[in-house]
Length: 423
Ligand code: AMP
Ligand code: GLY
Image (tube, rainbow, N blue to C red; front, side, top):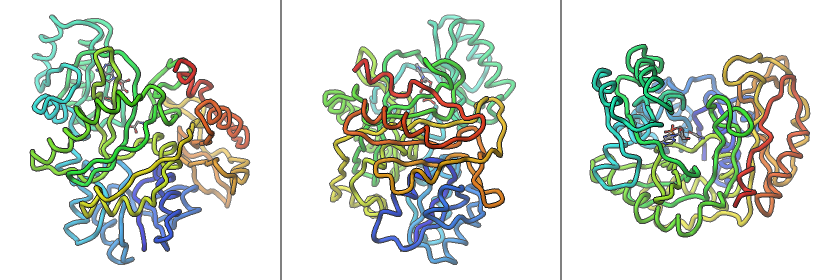
């Protein structure tokens, strides 16, 4: 089989690595890819939003399966373009990717079908949003409706912060048209868990759980980032929590989408908050998490191509999804200054140390080749992943492994997986 992967981050590197394990696959392409993905795939210089070009390439190269890694193309309808051309593609159509693409849609869906989530109101008029805040309880959460690179969420401690937030999102359009509509929701407290799942339109199979670390600095300080590290599984995701989510969240979401005439095929990523009143949905994403995929996929036992195909064919009920009985930790190596401003172009040394090192992986997020050398090319540069028989061993292994790679201005959090000690 020939497989095309669309995307260019650490998530797509992890997907490419996993696809490369499949004996069914003879050739992998990645558009646009990065310097690490090149080890498994031929990188093609087509952007993830160039749908027609991507589909033309897939036709020309007789690609058997295309996997979309990123949210923007999914929400923009890349799957519809591929299907129109008779191409096989893994990911939700535009009318289902709205589950991630519009927070107002997803909140209304949860309300209509009784899926537990924070109380909220949607607003299209900033005056009404401002009036609502006058009688609200604080802290409160403001969310731009659309995609905003994971940055469209503001947690406001008091009325003046919240008013400033409404102006930023709805009037100054800090997140562009993503802020035409805004959700204002109740602030929840608890532990966060990410649960990714495969969905074929009617059946859902969840993967092992994970937890992300979104803030830039130790102790969850600093700005929100795309994710500074992950661990899997989450020790807080107990069998009781899992049972509750299966009954009240996972299947109900899939059934709700089908009832709405928006059958979902692909990956649903449930961002959950484990509150004192039980699990609640924080958000849905319509794709693998980044860097959740980097700790979940190395623990997956199945041939991922079989699972992708079962989702497309509607035969996921026949797949026995299995994960290793161990743990994995990912520490992101970033450029000093991320997520605000940082330098790029520094040579990366020591990547060869990961070659054939069982249970260790280095997934590239922002790298490129320059004069035959791999150099830093982004805020998040690498995700170093290590497995271990339990979370503590995996964490120790990951923090040992990051010493194997060096580049100028290397920055990382020292406390990825610290929560494990409280479990
Ligand atoms: P989201 O993009 O919706 O996942 O939001 C980003 C982050 O903001 C989440 O991972 C949470 O840490 C936080 N967050 C979002 N919604 C809420 C909420 N209702 N209460 C507390 N924290 C929230
Ligand atoms: N790690 C969070 C995300 O992928 O959205």
